[in-house]
Length: 149
Figure 1: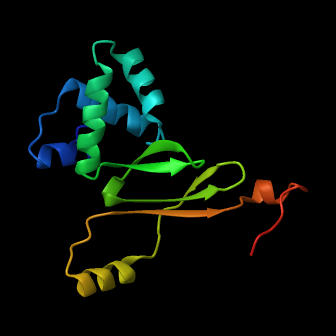
Figure 2 (figure 1 turned 60 degrees about the vertical axis):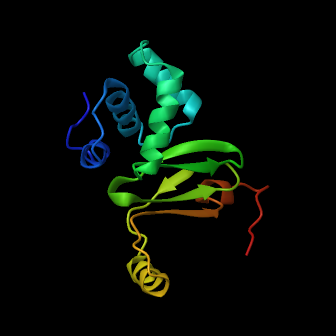
Figure 3 (figure 1 turned 180 degrees about the horizontal axis):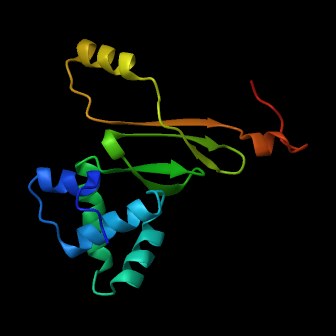
């Protein structure tokens, strides 16, 4: 059951959109899986939960959720698009360039930079996605993975 006070539901409601079954189902699934899903996997999960929700509805809902800043598409592994939940308008993770492991972290310490960018360019920053790339500790322990500096 979807939490009607979740950031995604609040964003839809605050923007004046109806809380339709497809929208609520997609938000619930994204929240259940932490938002790291490909569109193919999301369509499969939606259809398992409610076969009446069509593929087109899923893609229309994804477009709307990107527009509202609820989710953001990001490349993982070079070519696979994953949809990331953007709770509070931001999301941060490290992607291992060797095994594609995703490591999430909470505080990016970007408040000063965001304020500076807002002042310099006269914009209001509503959200951000921070992706850092490197080699995780598991891969660094492998003899065949070399360190890069």
